[in-house]
Figure (cartoon, rainbow, N blue to C red):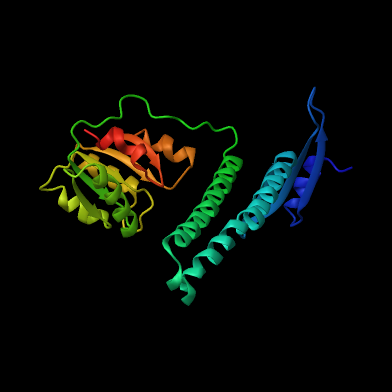
Length: 264
């Protein structure tokens, strides 16, 4: 067998090599290491050799994870989605006009059941990708005192309407303003000072993180509660780095989730 230095020398002549070596590890499975030598020519008089070391066991585990993720996405995830699409398409049938309220409620219940299954599978996929990463809870007091003036910032206008409805249904005295464009919300804050901001993260014009940074840069001190569809633990940890963020709630928003924030 050629020595490592001989292989490197040949690599400088334009050849590539892939070396595999199984290493014994006490009380553990063997580790299969791959060393890839690749010639790199950056100029007539400049020659380099790139050396890449790959832990094949780790690579195998990643492939297994991708296979499992792919199976869940293509089979388990698709099933409730197709059911929801089928159930929702029934609303377009002429026969729906003759259905009484109980039948419509039954249809909506079936759609809701399938949506909950879909949500459970998405959470399972998230746990699969984030194995071993614990979700950090917000520390300290999250209750906002006397939150009579509430700002909703979400690029989805339907979400804003639903959240407005949830808040005002139990709190008629609340002043709730809605913005589907974060920049307009920032302009509003030039002359207004709401008690609480409910903020989405994933927005195209300006995401929630940029919005939070803008609050800090302008020295706007208003309590913020993130209302997001994300269940990524890294997002929750990142939110804790902003002093203004008092809580992190996942969609869908319910009155039970926010009554400690608005029921004052």
